[in-house]
Length: 313
Ligand SMILES: C[S@@+](CC[C@H](N)C(=O)[O-])C[C@H]1O[C@@H](n2cnc3c(N)ncnc32)[C@H](O)[C@@H]1O
Image (cartoon, rainbow, N blue to C red; front, side, top):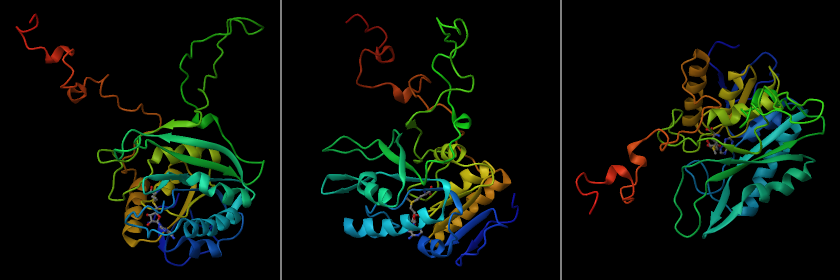
């Protein structure tokens, strides 16, 4: 493990062989153009959605797709033949009309010869409240592979079964436990809290990945010492998830404030002082933990709202 501060550079430095962390300050295309073919085992990112966030300039949808296509084309070139590309996207919204970005970009991925393996729904509880449509509470992670010979490690990401005590009731294994003791396949609906104000990982970056979301992809789609690359690195989450599991991490980020933030988080991860939400921790349930704010002041059937002495009126 590299122990000095992660390399921050505005010049891509190749070969990457001697390094474990590369933090490139600049446009991802400048990093990608010089990156050798078939270097990365996993490209994982959340690109700008073209919705006018502080780090992006809103443009026409055709321009947006063309810009994304250029980045995607390079990402596919630098991806190993056994590698995976995961693009985490939500919706582009204009005049109240929703365009799902993974659908918009699907032809781009397919034209690059990629094969779609899963469209993972990432469900979370917190976000803007919509007045004229249902509030958005999921985004998609589209997982593509470069070939049919791809790395997929299910065991490190298995989750507990609902009924681990279940047994075969007939056949040659009757009476034996029917579940895999390592847990079950986590499926393609992932319920993981998004990083909002009281999340332990919250920084000033407006759109952080939760680290556990990327850890699951790193563990299942790469092996130790493989390279994980994020072209739109933001606060450094993809590199943090990579080095947590003894992979190597590279990323590009155009804004210097976010590069500084990413560098600080990566340094704290290396020192063991970065707080992250552990993988597999159940989602906080205010009702079962009897949080007083979970009691509705308008629901008079709730015992706590009955005024003593007035119960029979
Ligand atoms: C949706 S955010 C990604 C946040 C990241 N997933 C995290 O966990 O912090 C997109 C990031 O891409 C950066 N960005 C936008 N265009 C870029 C480009 N051409 N090259 C590199 N970074 C870029 C933005 O500054 C922003 O931080």
